Length: 174
Image (cartoon, rainbow, N blue to C red):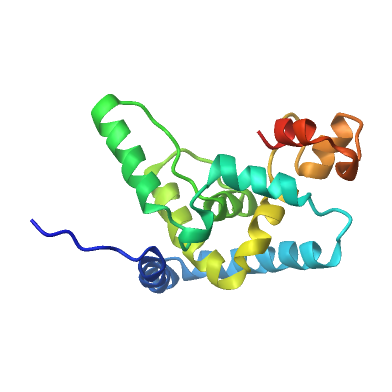
C-alpha cells in the first residue's frame, strides 16, 4: 500500500476554492466583520494582547498553527477516530475556525456548522495575515461570564494587560 503525502497548505488552497463556491454568501458577510476586526487590531496597539498571550494560545489551542491553512487534518482525523472508536468527543478547531465561530456568532453543535466553519476558515487565511489571527481571537473570544475579549478579562481581575505576570497571562488564556 502506498501513502500519498498531503501538503497541508496545498490542501487548504483546494478547500478554499470549493469553500468560496459553497459558502460565498456567508463569506461576504463574514469578510466585512473580519475586516473590521483586523482594522481594529492594526489601529489599536494598546489593546493588543501580549506576544506571550498569543504564543500561549497557539501552544494550547493549535500547536500546528503555522503549518496548516485553516484546517488541521491531523486534529480532525484524531477527533473523528476518538468519536468513532471511543464515543468521546474532542475538539479539532483551529484558531481560524474559532475566529469564524466568534465573528459569525454561530455556536450550535452540529456537523453542518463544523464543515461550514472549516470552509470559512480556509478563506480567513487568505484574507487576514496568519500572524494577526491569535491577537484578533484573543480580542474577541469569550473569557467567561460577560467577558468578551482579553481586555475585559483583565479588567475582571483588576489588572492592566501589560502588567500581567506570565502566570496570570497563562491563566487567562487557558
